[in-house]
Structures are given as C-alpha cells and as structure tokens.
Length: 364
Image 1 (tube, one colour):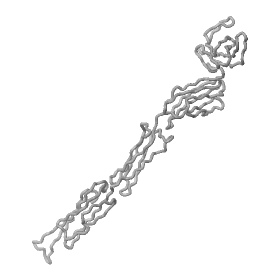
Image 2: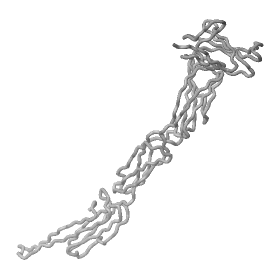
Image 3: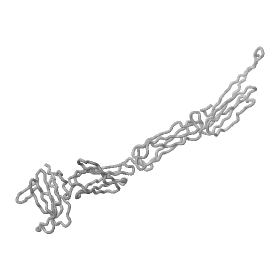
Image 4: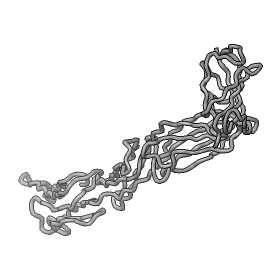
C-alpha cells in the first residue's frame, strides 16, 4: 500500500468442502495469504524518495504466480504492479502502486523590486522563491526579507519542497547598503559677489550636489553643481540677496546626507553681512584692492561719526572713539559703512572708486 516502507496485505480464502446432501463432520477450512513488501526511503504523501524494492510472500505456496517477481523500481513517477497468485482454480490478485520522486524541485529567486540605484538596494528587500517539479509537484516555497547588514556581496537562501518531501535550495545574491555617507565641515566663505562652499565627506561618498535657493518674487531652487569635488564657487551674486545652499553627498547606493546654509551675498564689503545683527563691535572686512596702500573707512549713523585710514583690508571697531573733537560710541541701532581705496601717500589723497557700502545692526 502507498505511504509505508513495508506493506502487507492478507487475503483470506475460505474453502469449504461441500457434500451433495450434507457437510461431513470431518470437513476442514483452508486459508490462503499473499503479502507484498515494499522498502525504500519514505517521503511524504505516499511518495518514496529512493529506489524501491518490492517482493511478495505467500502461505501456503501457490500453485502458480504471475507478475510476482522480485524487483527494484528505479524509475521516477507512478508505477502500478499486479501480482496474481493461484491456488487450484482460484486466482488471488494483489495490486501495488509505487510512487517515486528522487529529484528536488528546481528553485528560482524573485526579488520584490529592481535595485534602488546603480545595482544596489538601500532599503529592506523581500525575496520570494518559486520552484518547478515535474514528478510529484511543488508543495511550497519560502520567502525572506533582508534588512542588513550592509554587504556588497549579500545573499539570502531559500528553498522549495515537493510533495514527496525533497527540498531544493537556492540563493539570491545582491549589493546592499542602507547607510548614508557622512558629511562634515560644510562651510561658506564670502567673496565679492560670490561665495565659496566647501565640505568633507566619508570615503564612500561618490557624488556631491549643490542646490541654490534664491529668496524673492521668483523664488526657485537650482542645481548649481554636481560632481566629485569638495568645493564650489558661486559667482555673480546680487549683493544683499538672500541665498540658501544645500550640499548633498551620495554613495553608490544613492544613500544621501545633506546640510543647508543660508547667507546674504556681499559685494566688495564682506563682513559683517549686509544688515547683519551683531552684539559687540564688529570687525569690518572688505576685498583688498591691488596697489592700494591704505583705505578710507567711513561710519554713518544719522551723520558721519567716523572716518579713518587703515592700511589693511579690515578694521576692528571700538566701543568708543574721538572724531573731530567729539567722543562717539557704538549704541544699539543701524549703522552704514563705506570704503574707498587709497594709493600712494596718504597726504596725496589719491583715492580710487568707492568699493561699496554695507550696513549692520548693533543689537542690545
């Protein structure tokens, strides 16, 4: 019978001697038995997973048999056997069905989606496995979800089981990285109508991008840089204009890290930024002029309260000073300042064109 390694079947034939008119008291009954024996590696659902050995035993020995030879079945699939034993004129049939599947199913992996970027996955991935089995058929297959660790040679195993209990195995290999690169030291330095952005990123960063947002009626965001560098100079800015820059770095899997800096563009006068709020006397900084030997700096609050001639392109304001015989001091409020370059000796009063003007607010 299907489903057990060794099966037996007993058929009982009761033969009774019958007299013409009566059964003599000395009459006896005789029983005949035929047993089949099946051995092999048992699977599931009545299937065997190996070659199967089949033979029959009888009691008593029959007068003749047909199809009852000892045999080993090696063919996969379903084999039907019929052994017939005959005692006298009575044949006793014993059919046997043997189902064999020795081959595991073929397994195929199917990821739930295509790679996220450049052949890499950067978020959890579910992989389902499917199989084919031409003999007993597929009973079921596994699926799994991978969420790390990061691995350029990640792999997930899977399997399918056929109805005979054979297990076929497979695997799906892929690139996995869910960790963004590191972005540090994002800085911005002012130039005349320009800014220089600089940054540092971890070695896995392969691409940098800089976007610029300009405040105003036609506010828009523009990608101004995309490449493998670590600096970018943005030119032709409008002095006093409000700009916002976002630096983003990407790794091969398109994981990203970003940082945003807002600033006000400057002309030749670099610091403080136009209309910047300060809480202490600032250092005024401007763009050096080639050939200039001194500069004239004027500070205005209602009227002119300071005019001085530094020899370098910066001036540290003091809390108080004397100008034209009057003592002045920095008090909360709005201040404007202007710079002219001077050439030669101070006494010659040889000035170039106005570099520009800017402002700051001293807060309380």
